[in-house]
Length: 159
Image (cartoon, rainbow, N blue to C red; front, side, top):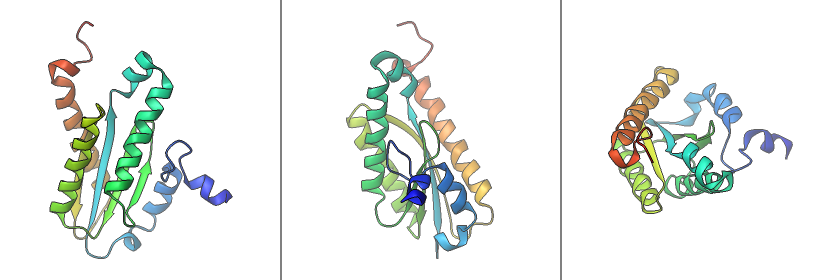
């Protein structure tokens, strides 16, 4: 039980950053034919916390975690690695299916007025997991920049 608590995020029940870092050391055992890394950031969490309170922000994070778990069920490793950041390691799934499921996640959450930015990288033979994660994160940040450039979501516009 104690080991499980050290590997799980208390709010979402997903694996936490401790488990994520442990799994980096056993990357080869996480997949047979391909591995995708999906890096997700929840947009607007800070603003929701300030406007509506931290309980509403926690509810957002739990909703994101729940939908990630539903869409990416089946033995994939799902982590909450930071306040509003999630990483999913998707084993042995076609790249088109990874893309489709990521877009489905974005769409379902958007219907609930929860917005995420996601970036993913898919590889057959992972040479450097660190580079893979950085590349997925870079794509996520580009998506996040595009999101906030939209007028209705511009953080700097007067309210």
